[in-house]
Length: 422
Figure (cartoon, rainbow, N blue to C red):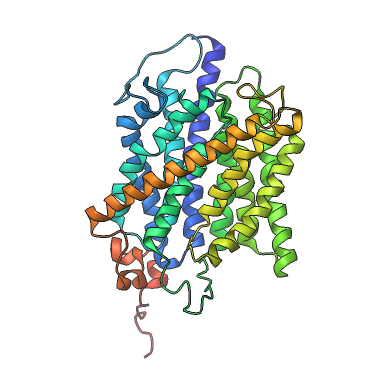
């Protein structure tokens, strides 16, 4: 193996580990954004669903996504076991490991729509079905040589493949599960079921931000020309712009500089730039991030008014921002960087690329939602319903599903110390 090929494989392995570490960011983000009585459940659920996603993607997901087949689905390379090496390029096992991490992230996003009210058994079954039949098909359409790839669809690291797909599954789950107890009053007003730890949420966002450089810069799949540095630059600028824009729009409208809004703005900027980080100029990355930060604020308000209970804002951060990021290529892709598809509208490319991007949003979003809805109904039939009982939800999923609290000293009755007074 040449030195360059060795460096390529080492770089992608490091980036794959960075993407895996993003799951730690999701644990802190989701646990901090929800209530203390469900924190242990959310943390444990994230770990075991990564395990399920890994096994299913190894068995069938990789084959459906990247195997030889047709324009719709791959039909080979199941139970992946490629141990071969290569003089140039990535070896099969490194490529598999990197792509597996993306599949696991999409599943984690999808489970945001389940938070604080779904049965553990529902997570298990849907994790298998989503990892086998939803994510891999969309990945094949765009990254596996499918019909959208043939049209020149631009999605460098997954605003559509990962984020929109996961968000549409989350939307299906929130509709079927219905809102958490106490979220909405009979008069239509909204109660703020605030998360229990903003420090956890902020640390989770920072971990995700760091991991995103593995997500985006790693998608260069090589080190030869150091283009990963340019991708990282655009990623950083968009995240920064999203955080600042969300902070100021929330401050201007509500009079308070809301911390969760700012954090979601940073994530929205990251999600939005994921499709375009290799296709646009740095100034465009800033614009993409600013718009993502603005729309995530209004999107969060919209879903609350629509009584769609989304505890970790997956629909806004990953769905709406994912749509914007996908469409942004149709405006900002430069002729020099458009190695697939064509330049965007603002660079003289006309509406061609914008049309392809819009088509991909509709096709992938519809497929992910409909397929997830059907699979969730199947899951509900197998588990006797997706949702825990009212009593279990009130007690909290830590105790009702696992038999112990994530914060046992805080949630359990305090025992008297020896010698303490009455």
